[in-house]
Image (cartoon, rainbow, N blue to C red; front, top):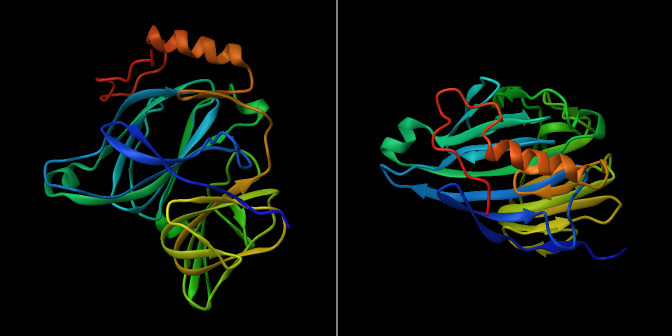
Length: 284
């Protein structure tokens, strides 16, 4: 079996903070439909501090936010307002165009809090890239889970291990959280054609090979297992085809991205009610 591609995290500014970026990568642009993956934190915000991502646009993708610690308040141009808590799933579909913000919860901003999670983008299939924007939120209690000896898995989106999340996704995919304990390795479901494992914290292995914290292993085909003691995320699915990526825009047609640039510069995107100022300018 060929060796897995292991991607090291790269620091990137997002809003007024910093994340560790795994996808896209020069040797691997996508894993299944997942075209983007950032690891947020773990950060400890002091009283008076908060995380703020001002109003910005998307096309041709769905954003998926999943937290391990802390809270974020999501607002978007569909009118959705939701507080994201650990174990819950926020799935926002941009389609032909959406705008949103992510901010620390006001109570956490006042008193200080932890923040730790993952932000991913899922490229939409050809027939939904230009569809209507929408929003779906699933609370932590609705996410299916299974205990395997001392370890546990939660299928946050899509399907895997015989479980189906209420957040089905736009194409065949999986986004799952694994809490792995010593002596209880978790076999990685091979339902999906492409899969990757992100080591979030602790000391983890993939088929007994160490996977450093913050790194993403893109798995070769076959039955695989995650061992050690720590927290991991599994993501993947069926490929949706090549995609162009520029800033917050993802699409099969590069001309559609050029049109989105012009629309954002002219502020022709739908606005976030009660939270559109300030907004993030188009990169120069």
